[in-house]
Image 1 (spheres, one colour):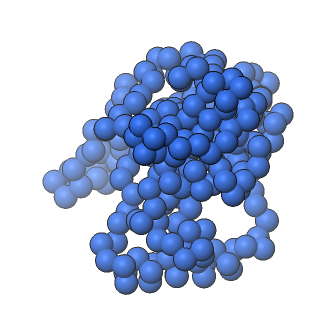
Image 2 (cartoon, one colour):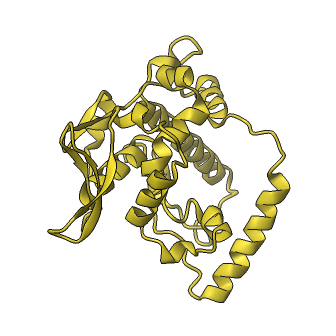
Length: 243
């Protein structure tokens, strides 16, 4: 499988650039992301990180169902449409990619002729997985409603809901996460030193704090007799501090 690529969690904790097929993928600190701009950052990683399900409403509006679109097909389409502009260069470098066709495997690729750098399906999946891992994006299988009629019904409902929210002011996702970490009793980070964390370290800290909170609440519920484990078995994965 082309999407089985994984960088070890230890390497991710170290931060810094990670090389994939001659391309050095930037693993920024929280400070670098804030300096670049939160919206710019998510646009920068969006070209590689977003899957058809993530953009299901955009695809639906263009007359496509996300279950009919391949990850790599979406990637090439987004690149050609310049949906994310040149923000992706902040993540992988200033390449002059052009769409090319590899006759050996009948596959469209991105090719920088001058620097002799190629992004094919395998390299795309590797970069995509790395970026998703850095930002701890879920790798669970996308929801598939089974039949086209049900899928269209769900998408139409989500589309109408999104239109109602369109004019609402967007709030910073990272701001909420930063405050959660700083104000947690399990954390020693402050508003002065949190900015040095790499993005993976940042999301890892958030995950550990969430696990600690869940574990403490679970233990309190057991101690006070408010949780009946015969009816509500404990999911040990959710309270495992060493996962």
